[in-house]
Length: 421
Image (tube, rainbow, N blue to C red; front, side):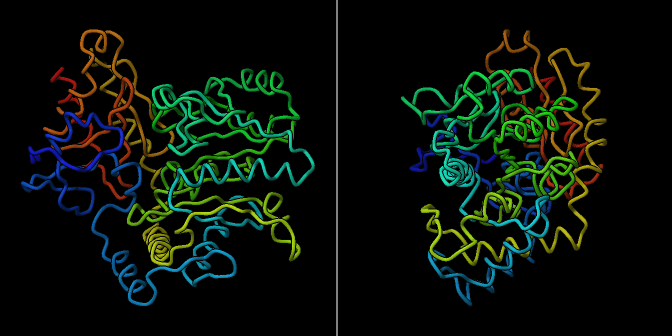
């Protein structure tokens, strides 16, 4: 395994830098569903990097589109009246595929940007409706909504929300699988004070937790009953991960007010994210010149080169019929991992809704060894597969272009890691 043994100046996200800075794993190149370290060792990318390499690595079509755009116009601001062709075309393509009519798209640099944008739009929405007291934002335990200000404040993973001092006020979270808890919280806060509810269709970083039957529909009904905006965080679940463009279409009758997206929109080739807003939410800003202005935006919003990567990615999704694969492959992934449930170190296998899964360790395995998850990850990596550590579990979310042989390779490597415990 290729490691870097001198202390690095690079401060890694979510890392024990005292350890990591002396032992980095240097990834040098990628090809298809595999990546290679500095010593040339090959690893199956069982996490699609950070849930985003849906098309795999080394796609020349995207690189060529990026290079061509950079030779034409590498970057330019889109504040005010300025725009560019890739930004316009990408937003039109996303709006056309969104499960809302006459949608509008606000672009940023990633998922964290998108969450903060959606939170501010939600609060501004009610200011424009003469209800400025509607500022409260509700989310779910175990939910992950990035690490920006609002995203940290509505996050449901305690380790990520603590030790920062005061966070954004007017937020709360409810148990991720309980409709009665959500209804109770709405009534506790007061329906006339709640602006929005943030919901991942399948919780990702918080443990790969599919929703109980009827939960998503029930959430939509509660939001509609109380006039609360439903914000679907599709940063992980969109672009085929659940087998549809934005994941939420799996629940056919649910029409979100906003959808946040990032990651798969460029298959990770360049940073890009945004918010898709329904006509009801966006209309006041588009109806009459001289109307309200959303005084918010990222420097690189509508970055032409990033948008060119997005357009090339969407073209590949359609040309190769990639989007349905998240649903087509959820069964094979579930079936490959199911036998691991009999392993004495395994507490639960969570899978079955999209091409993502978690192998959770048993309470006994974690009690016996606080480093069990790290050892499982290391054991799988030694067997040639990268999986992602979670609290008490490992996540699996491979590129959507994998085949059955790769799924089998993942399951075998995870078993090897488990046996190493």
